[in-house]
Each structure stands twice: as structure tokens, then as C-alpha cells.
Image (tube, rainbow, N blue to C red; front, side, top):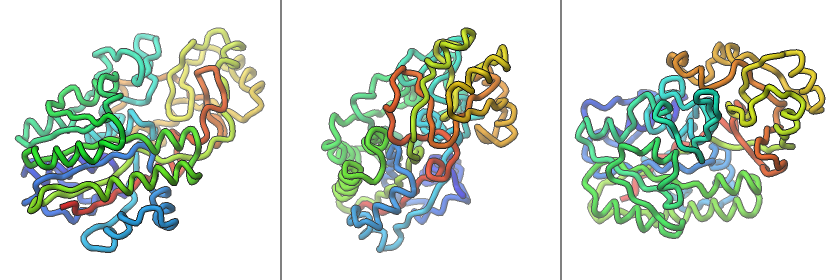
Length: 366
């Protein structure tokens, strides 16, 4: 199965002979003669959700387009761990976490936990592989990004888009198609990256398949119907996601564990749905975990590496960013490091198929 790491290298190959065509990504878009290729990353939209939405009749515009060749939908594999910062870095660099070094949302830097969503990111945690923006400049391909305005000045945006010279924003979701259509009309031929996160927020707080999820899915379908380039323009749309979701039975309060084990860090690194720590006293830790009343495995990080976690590449230069062991709760349970519990309805970061399989949809939009 193709991976989200195949998407951007294949997009570059549509505009440059030096781009890398993925033999795994089943694209029907021609190699030449394209005006724009829009890569729309819909945060949290698993392949199973799109399949269910189509079966429920919630996406009539998408359904109608998929019935006309050469449009199609295929499953893609995301990266492990299937967390937003990790997957976005992999999409925008075309490389696995083991190569770019962003191993999760919360990493250690000189012994202190850094949350890449909220904290200042030290230069030492910069991506170790070039982004699509850097590669496009070298190849002479026009590249621009369209992001939500609320994340424009966030640390993760600075990390992923620091080399993006052409960056536009939309204020509210209602303006998403307006801004994209302006880019299609005014920009030179090239790649446009579009990011939206509404379905992810709904999934986390309300869950998948309920009424608000259905409304958000229908909004995505309406946007799809509003995308339009100028007459005579040959533009294509690729839709994918960073991860899917699975239901959460209950959150486990890290604070409860911290009260019993004094040497644990106040803010731990996290790898997917697990806590990552350097173990000083295994017996003390296991005794404290027994009090949590939920089975929690203490797994050496080395075992995860043997299983292929973080993907291909030499992860050794980045191992100081994570702990020696992972505290992995039973499926359906998730750690909370914020003090409050039951803040999530559905979550991601493990290795269940619903989290790891995302859509890849290819359409002509003009």
C-alpha cells in the first residue's frame, strides 16, 4: 500500500523531470500539462469515515465525481505514530519520522518536554529533511500553502512552513473555497497545499458518525463542489489525511501516576497513545501502574524500533527526544497529561487500522 510519504514527491514529478514518481501511488493525472495540483489534507479523516460517509449518502458531490473517470479513491497508509505533527511532517517532506526527526507531538529537548503545538521549538528540533517548499524552489516549481489563519503564527506552522514563501490563509471555513479559487485564478502553475482541521476537532470531542460529524462531512462535500479554477485551466485535486480515529473508553490521568513515582518527569514525552519515559526503578514503576486498574505495558523503545516504528531511516540521532520505555495502555484507553479526564471521545496515535489508513482521492476540478 502507498503511504502519505509518496504524495508530495509524486506531485513534484508532475512539474519537474527531477521529481520522484511513486510507483505505489495510483495517479491518473498526466505528467505534463497540469496547471495546478491541489493537495488537500483534511485532518482526522480516516479512510473508513469517507467510505461510511459515501454509503450514508452524505457526500453526493464526491459520489458524483467518483462515478466519472478518471476520479477514484484508494486507501493510503499513514506513518507511525499517527499523530498530526508527525504525519504532516512526513507528508510535507516525503519522508518517514525516522528521517525527519519529528517523532511525536511532545518531545524531550535537553531533558525538558517540548509540545510542538504550543511551545517555542528550539532550532535543534528543526526537520532533518527538506520540505516540499524547499525542494520546489530547487526544482523551479511554484508551491504555495493555504492554512487556517488561527494557526498561522503557531510553532508547528513555523516548523513545517518556514521555507514557504507563498502562504495564504482563510479566516473561517466558509472562506476556504474562496481563498483556494483565488489561488487557482492568480497563481502560476504548480502545487497548492490546503489544510483544514474541522473534522478532527469534531471527532475528538464528539466522536465519529454522530450528528455533528455528519454535518462536518457534508460541509466538506460542499467545499468540494465550490472548488473551481478558471475556464480552460487543467487543475487536479488530491485529498488525503494524516490519521483516522478510534473510540476512547477512558483517559488515564498521568498526574495520578506522577504522585506515586517521584522521579517521573512533570511533563513526559509522548509517542502516539503511549507515555515515553526513562525508567529509573522498574519495580517501583510497575507497582504504581498496577494501581491504575487498567492493563499498562512497559515496553522498551528498542522493541518498537524492531517492529518498524518511525518507519525507514536511522532514528539513532533522534533517540534523545524520547525515553527508554513506553507506557502503553490497553486499546481504547488514552493518557491525559492535562489533569482533566474524559476530554476525548475518539483519539489516535496507536496502530489500529482505523487510525493508520487514510484516503487518497484524485479528481479533476477544472
